[in-house]
Amino acid sequence: MESLSDTKWDVVISGTGLQQSLLALALSRSGKNVLHVDPNEYYGGAEAALSLQDAADWAKKYAGVDGNETFSAAQLFKDGEGLAAPRSYSIALAPQLIHARSELLNQLVSSRAFRQIEFQAVGSFFIFRSSTESSAPMLGRIPSTREDVFSNRAIPARAKRWLMKFLKFVLEYDVEPQTELWKSQQSEPLADFLEKEFKLDSDLQSYVVALTLSLHGDISVGEGLASINRHLKSMGVFGAGFAAVYPKWGGLSEVAQVGCRAGAVGGAIYMLGVGVSATQRVSRDGRHLVEITLTNDLTIESKTLIRSDAKAPDRHIRLSRLDAIVDAPLTEMFEVVADGAPTPCAAVVAFPQGSVSGEDGTPSQYPIYALVHSSDSGECPTGQCVVYLSTLSGSGSKTLLDSALSKLLSAASQSTQPAQSLWRLYYEQTCGAGSLIVENNIVSFDRFTPDLAFNDTVLQSVQQAWQVVAGPDADNDSYMKFEDREGVQEDDAFDS
Image 1 (cartoon, helix red, strand yellow):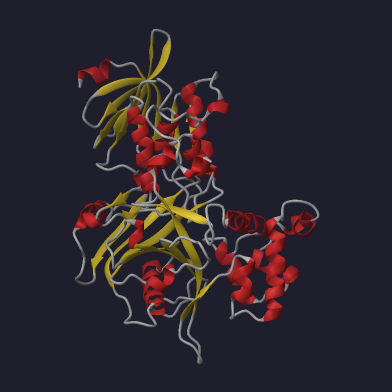
Image 2 (image 1 turned 90 degrees about the horizontal axis):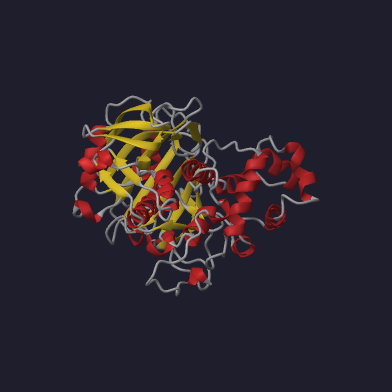
């Protein structure tokens, strides 16, 4: 351990969350002395994926902490028999799908890190429809292509024409003359814009708004059009029938581990179960350094310290989450919907505002989203699936999420015996903007974003942190652009 104290560290990275791990990837060929520590015994930070035993330990840790922590209010429930061995599961704490047009995928390709990640297709987007006098609750598939619209039997012919007009418009919404239609209304609610300009009824408005994955449900015209444009332009990029992918075995946790693995191959030293307990700035021979005391009582010095911001951001967003293991495969949710398309490992279900009620009958104030993952995701055994539900925190959030889970399982199992939950984990998460705070040679990443689809803006913070470490002479054009290491064959489809 003495050698760690004697080493002249260029950078110490605290935490193995996604942003810190991508920074490790970016520095993996820099030749700098990097020490990467994490107080947890696992990789991934707030984006980790846990076995059932690790999840149980995690729930005990975060059961009673206050809301200033990243996670709080954790509760674990075992609902029935039928769970496999704990290591058969990989439960993601903050799952996010990745659109095919995401800059994250471009960087994973240019850095050659993609070779170590198995991506799978995210399939259909559904919307929950409550029961009526003439129909049971159901999951309606949201159309997002021309073929989807024309094959949908639930949409009247006249409404299909207006929906097609909107889809055509949004593909080029950001160029003239389309900008003239919406720029003056960009801060207005998207739903109002859809009714006014495209005559979409409330049902079709809910379809479109659901595609934005907006947590508030009242997304603005500007933000909404950008989100839908990204979704539509991602459709078909990597194959027919899907617009997004998901990393197998645990989502963003897999990306984080690949970044750390690249850092280790590049010479970085890794220490799990060791965090930072104290810091102070010091001067040595005219150099400004950070003196860092680790939780194992070792003291080291580094030119730069990269860490997670320990304080809740002033404008934080608080999510309520419910992860559930279900005793059925829900195969109808993962059907192939286009010729030549791969079998998806995930589906998205949107519960619009007011479609779920709490115990006292109060309707949900915010939308609820469910990411449903099949066993092909590597997160559960064959014959089961994992459901990740989330909504903005409010009064009775847990009850609302439980109700949404029950409704989803009922609607998705209409042709068979209703599926049942075997295991549930409820918790609350305080999220930030994924931005960066630079205070001389101590750099802090804000808490990660609450988005259900990966937000590329967090990549800007990673590059900014890299610039701090690399120095003013860093070549930004070479950022995250590496050649394959010796012995790797360029035979992957991504290379073409």
